[in-house]
Amino acid sequence: MRWLHTAVIVILAAAILIFVAQNFQSVTVGFLGLRFSLPLALLAVIIYALGMITGGSVWALVRWAWVGARGTTP
Image 1 (cartoon, rainbow, N blue to C red):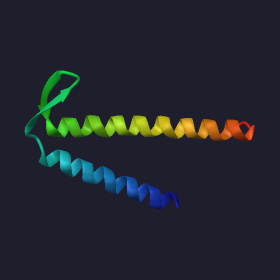
Image 2 (cartoon, rainbow, N blue to C red):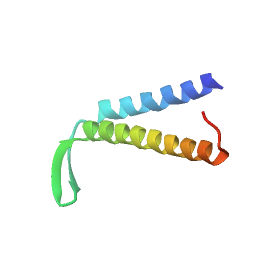
Image 3 (cartoon, rainbow, N blue to C red):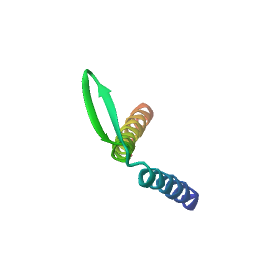
Image 4 (cartoon, one colour):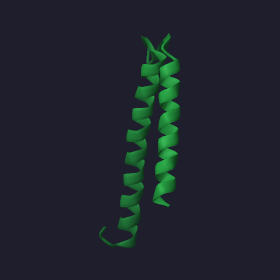
């Protein structure tokens, strides 16, 4: 099962890298009244990293709640 998870991660990372390599045009992004102009590839990498951080935090929170609800230590 670990190999399947590793394969999925490698395939998704490869797809992201291919997307980044093919999209270097500049885009304008607006957030809370601020405007940024940056390459689409850089935006994709930033959003991917934020998704990893957010997903990891949510997973840690769910695991902490699950262990706390069971009354056991990890």
